[in-house]
Image (cartoon, rainbow over all chains, first blue to last red; front, side, top):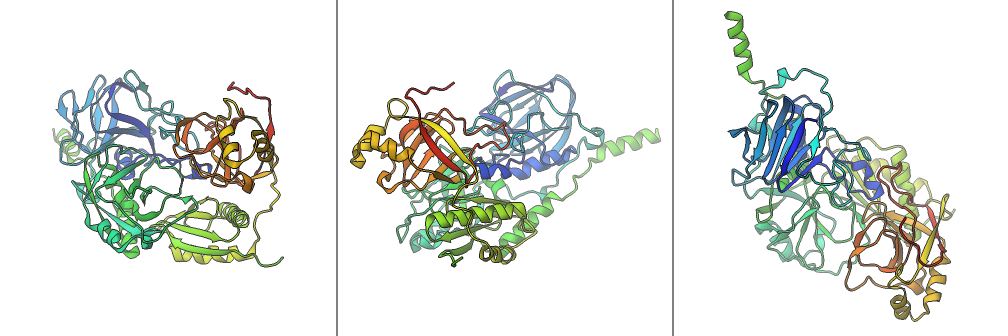
Length: 329
Length: 226
């Protein structure tokens, strides 16, 4: 065993890149809410970018390492401390046996989810192509549930030496533009045109607040009641994370990683996938804005996102300098 | 074969998906969607990631770095013209025992009243059909079965239940369905089957697949969970 969960905090689950191919069985993909942070956490320590990691929500978690472990922490700065000392996110670190890692909670004025990857990846059975926890369905990850105090987690053996990775860092310029009140770019959904002109205007001019019930399934976006200029009676159709659907009460819902595969409410907008990491870093009560974009700009955003992910982690200069000093001495 | 009265309506669903809706008679539209979904899964066009069928639409997700909406539509559209809908007679037929009424089907009496029928007539009509699985959705392995005889059409319950037991056989909105696991639900519960419909450890995890046939066999009352 590698990790002993002293406290899981608000919500900690095992997540990887999800099970999109299981959509055809009616199974939500699940997986990390912030896929970018998951992929980078894995890349910083030499894991495949879809290895299973911990998704920690909002803070409060306290983990004890039972063995020396190479880890990388990405996503939100949830005030991680190692035996009381600050642990910087977006870099790899080698944690000693007996170390405790504590997440005090949000430090900046943004952030909801941090990702902790362990060299080799967290061991969990593969179900329908993924190790991700599907909370509502009660399967995947660790017994289909959130972590509890007393849980112990193992990792798979890492095929390579961990030393070259210690201290590697993910450059700031190759990350999504995380921040307070993010602007999520959207393309019009199939039922955008059925909104009243006032509703269409309001959609991109209102600062929306994420409702109290926001979770991995989706966020209610308070601050707006959208109405349609025509009555829509829709057959159900497939939906994906990023879709903004409008139930009869007019309050839009942004679908996230664990959303059901089929929906019957009008979909007025689809947040582009490169902006979903920003949405993943929002807690209930936080605000966001929606901005219309074009297909051309959306494709460019996908390309930029792919280029960020293809960035090489930056090696920490210190081990090199120490080696040099050793060679000279 | 005479040309089918189906029209295919394409639209982007964000930067990385296409929503293909089929307009026409529901059964034919559904069979066409399922046939196209099967064809695309067997030979996916370049860049396609998944094709998720609903009753009369198909959501096609793709990698926008590899393909565009226009390229995928240009590859898929000719397929729509070259094949007919999937056969009306299902290849696989599942016979599922159902205990109707009582605690297994707490809404049976109210449903019969609302439809102006006797509970027995509801049971006879509901169990006397061969249904097709028109889609899986709402929850893992939840089958939408149709067509439901018009005499059994009812809107959803005004107040959904917060928990419907697994195996509940329900009707609403012109369809019948089976809750695979305990879920919240707004359909009318008329019976219950002990059959396991979803198991994430199995391959495939869902016992029923779109296009399959389902027949309900009237079982003695009092079927319980194992």
